[in-house]
Length: 253
Image (cartoon, rainbow, N blue to C red; front, side, top):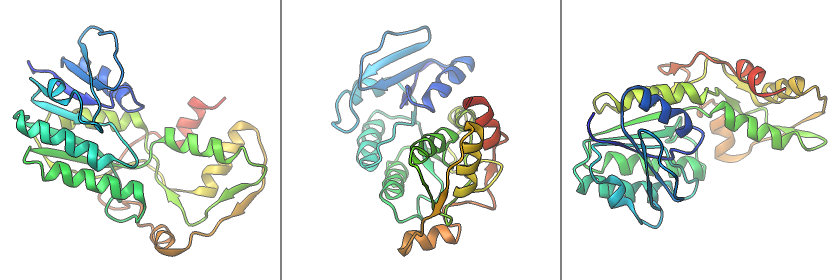
């Protein structure tokens, strides 16, 4: 490609994997960030704010492909609509968006925001691709680190997760970015399903800790969805190869 690929969220967990993969593929990359950065070879930085709608026009200028990774738990739909409105006006030919598995099934604010952003992309008039991925190993590690600081660890037994490695998500996104618009593609999940108690126990074991777990019920609509496995895609998803155990062995000493 001769024009740069505009990347939002390029300095986050996923973006830090995506940038070198795009560079290895011979792409010029332009990263939109709220903070100024010193340019490096093959990577430009544009300063702007998706929520405020500032700096987007100059960031999009000249880009034919936009890879939208920036996330905002409360304002995803707003920031995405601001981005794709400018992308449409600028004649962008492909918008790629990363969402979450079950965005249309889990009645929680984060999932609703992701679904709203998905709709913003699909309704933008710009050819698009959306990938829904499971929770990253990195996120699960952060959550467990906070939970296990307590003397007694809450463990909602209804919750099952199929965490995926962020590097595998990054590799898939780069493939999609360099391909033609494909709409909503198959979900990407990790190779194994774990209950929350299993995840907690494995984390404590690797840390050499022993703490009691207390079952925590999940009432209401959210509880029904999780008990039924509605947050998972058990059939038809693409599966990564790196397990939670592989990730723990690498990250936790």
